[in-house]
Length: 424
Image (cartoon, rainbow, N blue to C red; front, top):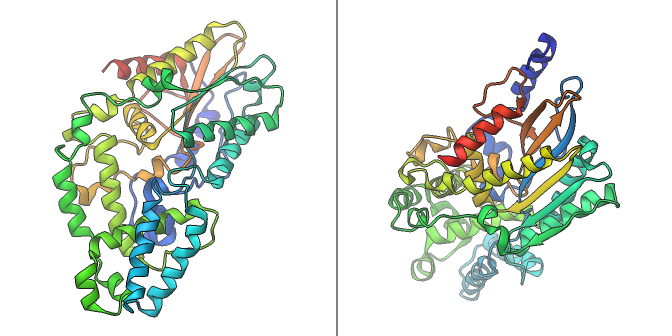
């Protein structure tokens, strides 16, 4: 399938604009400290960027996979243990004025966070409504009367609530849409699959663990933090594990962006400390979810069932005369990261094994911030030709399939590639 030189030039320009730079630097974290949260980074997109389709092609189907939106820390204890620790120090007159101020801030956020460990936050719901609204406005033909819609989520409530918010966003645009939805075990084999073979690789006996443990020890330097919070060295020596305390503050600090509160803890850790800790977290996520070579491809293969479902649902829509609509799926970062690695999307795959160098080629927050999503948008013309483009977090992205019309790929070639990687 050929296109004009003008369109090709525009497509190449779009690639340079929308392509994702791999890795992350200290300067990037200094500019936007929230990125140090990795997969806790709140969804940064507020505008979907779309290259116009070639002349004569109209959108008719969207295959989607979305991570749940912003959430609270996974357990109430992620807040309460740190709060109790600071109060114990205050009772022993062991906090500096800054430490007392930090304790008061922790008390204030507990009012919102208590009893919500692991739940979708209001921001998470807003993210999904907004993504759905932009999807509808960008591709209204997909949702024309008679649209065949289906939505499914994992059995985790934050994913189901994300699905409900997304559907709400679509129905705000078109109340007549009928969107059956499910959140049950029947779809878990592709929404959230983890093979028996991959399990041992993510355990403490896996090939990543000792490397991660050493790296975590090297990167966690809490001396400055402890001195800023505590006035009594003897108290610290008796009651405080400085490295674990630093990680407790890291989790709280990076998750504030996902809550309704305006309280911040970014002054508790320096940008350099945030970057050091993020690199540890980044390696953890990469080595247990992506293309970490010692894992022998088991994590990446976990996405094969999902790719097969993507193919099957697309085939069903294409086979139906005049078929149009969308398949909406909702899961977790531990699903979308293997999927992007299996597809070998630009910037989502790395051969690096050294944790101290991984940040040069792979950054979790660029792949799966809160509410991250993969959309495959299908277009066809009157001659029945079908092309598709892939969008990661509403940005067009490339993968290793030949095309002369990026960001669009001929569907037969893309389908062949998807079938091949799903079998490997």
